[in-house]
Length: 320
Image (cartoon, rainbow, N blue to C red; front, side, top):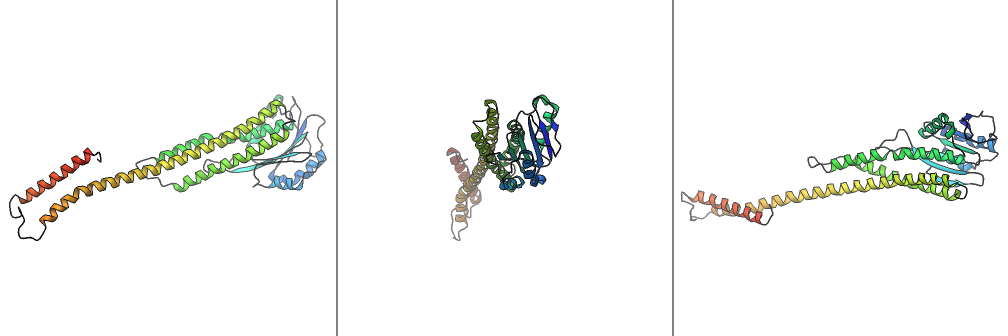
């Protein structure tokens, strides 16, 4: 658990665990999920406000979706961010819970959160750019979390290109259907996740619209827009993957049709040849040319003539 004092234009300073809120600026209480059971007592000590029990449970629930709720004393925003272990093949998310008070921001997050470490490092090195309010700090944390989602776009696009290349490779049939279906499921989950995030942030903005400055409102609007960009990108990738699958089956169908047409033409060519050989194979005593020296060659020439005539006819009809 960390407790920080933030004053505009000053270095961020840690606060002793037993101190109360500073007289100027605001404070940031940062806890991990393992410390979620302490949030109620710490907030009550700092502000005199008791967090609702169900919100304490939500803060410790690692499966909680992105959402927004409020009371007369604070707002609670749950936002699912990417885990450092996330890859294109396995998108792993964890919730970060924000309790937003007038002069206190409380975060309950994963111990290895990159976004929190990034924001702490930034305003520790540049005190002049330290957050001005709890809203400002929450916006910076959310922006860092959304940036990690934006960074997924290029790997997802590259993975789509790999699937398309494998699906449309005429030299070998595609066999990684399990991996492809798993990737499509990941993309659908990313769409659903982005939709939950967008709804939660939009509900919070609508709730606080009268209190936010135009600049802060615009910054939160950018977060919503970036979430929407992630969602649209995921939807585009899913559509393109679906199109590639349809092209694959269309190509397979066309290939099957071409094979069947070739086999049909071969069958059509051999049918009259079979008829000719069948005639000479009849058990009659007298067949014209059967006992002549030229009979065999005459039948061969006739069969070759039939083959050539049929090939010319098929070419004329553009069946070959």
